[in-house]
Amino acid sequence: MMKCDPNNFTGNDLERIEAAIRAARKSGGTVRIPARRPDAASKRDYWLLDGAIRIPSDTTLILDGCRIKLSDNCRDNFIRSANCGHGAADIPVVCNIRIIGVGGATLEGADDPRATGDSAKTLGTGLKQSYGSDAGKMGEIQNGDWRNIGILFVNIENFTLENLTIRDSHAWAVSLEYCAHGNISNLNFISSGSRKVNGKIVTVLNQDGLDLRRGCHDIDIDTIKGATGDDLVALTALAPRRDHAPGEYGFTEMSGCRKNMRENDVFAIRIRNVAGYCAGGHHIVRFLNSSGVRMYDIELENLRDTSPAGLRCRAAVKIGDANPAWGGVTPLGDTTRFRISGIRSRAHHAILVAGSLTDSEISNVTNLNPETTEITLRSSPENLRNVRIDGNAAWLAKP
Image (spheres, rainbow, N blue to C red):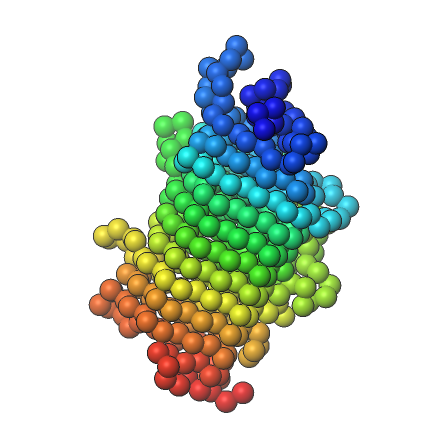
């Protein structure tokens, strides 16, 4: 085990970690990363990355009380599955990846990030721009993309992600695309939508916590906490406005949309024990699908809004959206079989239904904001069918 400690290898910090991963493939696949041992190259006790740690199949990465930080030269993820990257011809399936933190393991963004935000944001300090030191530089992509995601898993079967704190992510802290049969637990997010860079407060957009994108299914999520600049947990299964090659820069997602639309569906997701808030005032948990991508068999149980006095999120839980920019209201039956219970909210809306919803149950909802009711219906009645609240057939619209 000790020979797979990156402290025992030479090179820069990323090269040492990758050398330990290669060595581990010959000895059971487990790499343990403790604190960096100060040496002649640097007195740092934390790891400083110039690029992403790439995790192949059958690998367990144990982050043992360590701190891993992105350098100011890095425009890349903390960690991503090794099957994907810029210029990939395709993205094959990888299996059996585990990332486990112990002893307070932390991933932390750069002091002066080269880029932040998703692909819809340009780099800069103007209105609706997201900070990046690459702003205005010739030869550099001038909007965010998948490299700004903290942990990026794509096309993985059987995975575990647990016991990590992610601080000041450059966009979404964790994003999954086409991943299945996984367990995610005990993730703590610390971000606010802004930060101090060189003595000035700058805007960092799209700091979601945990995002599940197209094609994710059969995933258990338990104990998500903290504060994020954007949605704390989001299931966003959207068909892209235009397709692209795998790993192409300038796109938030690594992979394009599958031609078989059913492979893009998000289903069998179980979320339990969420305690946190969106510092940017957006949503704590958001469910959004569109353009023929279905979302079904979704469970959310026990959400506690921990927002401080003076801050109210838009909604503790939001389902769907009528905005044409997101594809509009989904056809009846495309967003279905949701079970939501145990919601304790201080938001403007405890549960906001803004799109279609069928064959679903909502129960035990408490809104501590006296200005609104527990459940807000923004969608038209014809977009709802067989939605029961606390066991009562509250919304029964005809098909």
